[in-house]
Length: 240
Ligand SMILES: Nc1ncnc2c1ncn2[C@@H]1O[C@H](COP(=O)(O)OP(=O)(O)OP(=O)(O)O)[C@@H](O)[C@H]1O
Image (tube, rainbow, N blue to C red; front, side):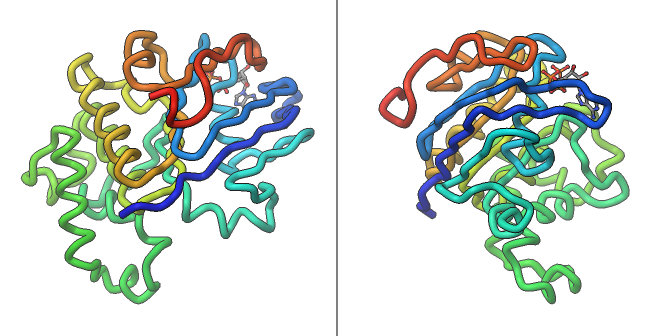
């Protein structure tokens, strides 16, 4: 599995929420394909808003975003979305479904509809789900468990596996280790970066822990009140 990651180009982007709050203020950012970037900043600084904008979940009111050279617009989003794996801050998992079904949902967009509707997923994909969960520290006994029987930290790792299973060219992770103890957090970030290296995916990840960001990312971007106040490191894999 080797495909190029998506480059990211954000130019003078301003994002204003419906209530008038300016969450991002003229943010510009260039990330090379396959690079791993951490976004840091205090609560409310705009990390989730930036990830939402790049993931096409919040349209910029000014500026532009290009993913792999394609301008992000409502009409280009359906083509881009299957290339993006997203880890949400609030997990967005189906509590009544099994762990396996939740993970496989991340690959649904890449499969023929009949497979999704009949719940008949390719064997290699089911094996991949087990592999990813194992990488994240959840053994195969978790596959058949209902999501609502899991702890918060276990559920968070299911959300990570769901984002990774479709072989995304871009991984956007919003505080993916917020519910995890330090060793498990490190393990989860290593799982994300090892899958990204394997597939060539670009990664943008919001984190609160400076030590984890330093060990995980080639580049760290600091946000403050919706603006980039510093961006360490260089773009692309050469900074590894
Ligand atoms: N749906 C929304 N409607 C209105 N304002 C919002 C909305 N979502 C976020 N905001 C505001 O936008 C700003 C940026 O919020 P954002 O969630 O991006 O910050 P964050 O850095 O991810 O914070 P945290 O670390 O707490 O998750 C904040 O002032 C927040 O109150």
